[in-house]
Length: 495
Image (cartoon, rainbow, N blue to C red; front, side, top):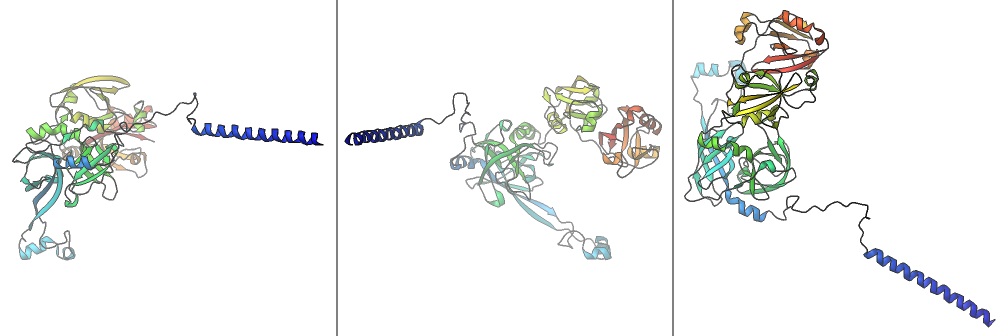
């Protein structure tokens, strides 16, 4: 009996020892797993860590930067004389009396000419100093037609400024003050290197609140908002308000990369700045001439639609389609023709007409540039000597009517129509009517349009027009060269 008890006790002790050992081993494994590295195995690649330098050094505070840059920013207040249209109505426009008594004629007949009131209109803006002797960049719309421009520095000193140069097409102006001593100057950055997502800071005079600092990021680049022919705006969510116009947009190195210019009236966090590279490129002209001289090749261009790309058998829609070559201008002398597609200028690939316009405008008068085009599915290079851009005169339009195809009616251009349009009698045919919902209507053809070409063949009469329309190649679609007012453009029409 005692022998059996002894065996049982030995077994229990052995069992307890095994359990203790199991718990000890388990505990050790838990500790090892807790302190062991948790990275992936040798066959798994890890993502590289991104340093703060790589993401533009996200600032912990803008205080030091703002303190350093504020002295380079100025407040601009302007005064201009505005002459009211009529002294009778303080509300502007027509009054109920106008309907019954004939408006101004009635009052002038019985009371004589009413003197027009003049009043002073005051506005506020911003700017920044670009030279120690007092040259300042701002917006054209801030100083345009101003009788008096007053510049206030960050230390409270005030100076009267003169306009040195203005450019309405880019909304950039250069003004100058005559300071008593050397002024702090804003460092100019490189807006071409700016990246979407970078931190930026705006300083300005919104609503007259001097030296206001706001911050945000670059939301987009190359925005076209319809402000002018050379739109290339930086979009930012840094708060920009009325009065910020003309003020600087800084990067985190404290360099100016843009000129704050516009906002979306009913938007929030949507502001636009002119790239400083654009301002720099026209600075010499503004300083020396007071205006900007831009390059001109003498062509009218349009973007390429899907239908036009198919008709011309192009690989894609990139490039700019020449719709008109002005006689005697550089492109004409170089041999360019309507229907050529510009794909490259001096090594710069051309994406669309807007880019081509900006590229050409950047060339100096007299400069020779290489223009690569696609003509009849072959690439050709022409050397064009750039001249100064000048505005072309408007062309009048008139009406007529006879011969219907693709839902539009055309007729020969009579001597009377030719005189009204100031064009040769044998220039194309004129559209006199467009049927609603027709193929011609779908692509935007309008009465008074002049058709100059069909499928790149010149036409001079309805007879020639009908001959080209009846060809097999024109059964399903045609490409027309249209003249409308002062514009000339291609359009593809499908049945």
